[in-house]
Every structure is written in C-alpha cells, then in structure tokens.
Image 1 (cartoon, rainbow, N blue to C red):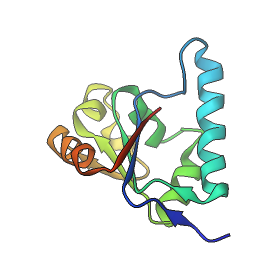
Image 2 (cartoon, one colour):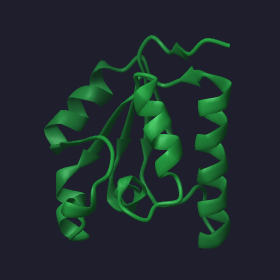
Image 3 (tube, rainbow, N blue to C red):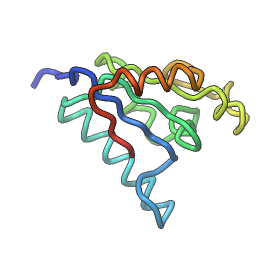
Length: 117
C-alpha cells in the first residue's frame, strides 16, 4: 500500500498520551495509534505537538520509531518552542522541527481539517 498524505489534515497532539484517565493507558493508546497510522498509510500532512505532547518527540519516547517513520513518509512534525522550553527538553528533541505559537496558529488556520488527540 502506498502512503497517502491527506490534502491538508493537521493532527494536534496536546499531551504525552491519548484520552484522559490512566496515564499508562494513554501512553499505550498513543503508541498504538501512531503505529497504526504508519502502517495504514492514511497520513496527516502535519502533526503539531504542544503542552506535554512535546515529550513524545524527545529522547526516550516510546513513539520515536513511529514518528521517524511518519517523517520519512513526508509528514511534517512541528513542536511548540514555548512548551519544549517550559519542560526544559529542547535539547532532547529527536524528530521534527521547532515552531512558535504563531507558526502553529498559521498551520491550524491553513488546514482543511484539524484532528485533536
């Protein structure tokens, strides 16, 4: 199956897990979700990470392999600079680029569809 990047879908990951409740379950869910979209090949054009979601792009994250695969398939990964600075993990970033909040606002505005995780 060939990769199919959506016309202009933006996926927002706002925490280092998926859903609310158990943090352990949330991490398991986001790990599975990202692995499945890599395998399924229906890809968002852009994934933005903010708040604790930026932790997923950093050293030690269990989803780095999936994120690297998405990046290799042409998905743009953008992490909030303010968030990386807040958690003091800017130097631990392993994938993606760093963007400002105005960058993220522009990406959201330009997107045809925004999916919040």
